[in-house]
Image (cartoon, rainbow, N blue to C red; front, side):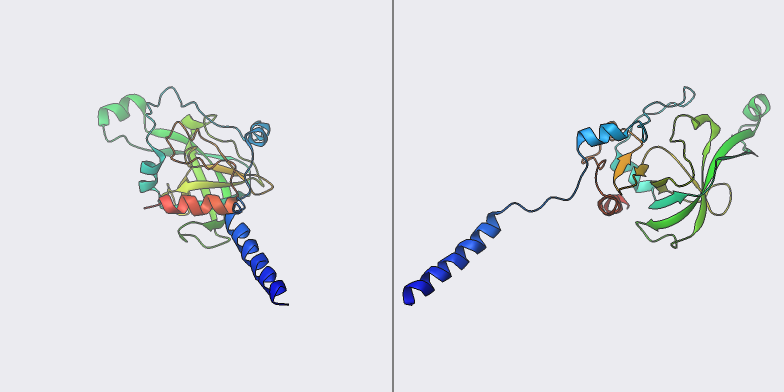
Length: 206
């Protein structure tokens, strides 16, 4: 009887030891092959307008100017509008004019990393027409995470860029709309689940 008890204790000890040595279950993540297969539907935008002189800044530095990362669903079709915007130089304005064209999409906020929005809040995300074709083309029903900073030309409108934007697939995985390696991300987030994406992006907001 005593021998049986010793064996039982040893089995419990070995079971605990093996459990401690077993590798932790990793979080679900899309493989490179799975992401490649999805890229036709969720493309990466690597080009910039020829009129815009850009230099890739490390993503972590860009996040210092971001108020929050918002997870939204697009609720309507693209809309267009014009606005007079002075460059602050009368000679330039006289030569080139002050009218600028923009496009925007209506969206509803599902959540955001810094709780700047209320769930269900309706917003518009907009960009200058010079970026048309150089940032994601959106359609009703699409879900994405984008970097929201301040309000645009009117209340409830926020600027939209490819940088910091992640498509969210129907299965809840994230795919970047920008080249994460070009912007020197310490750890790329394409392929992770939405919950992980929001957690990691939230850590970058200053």
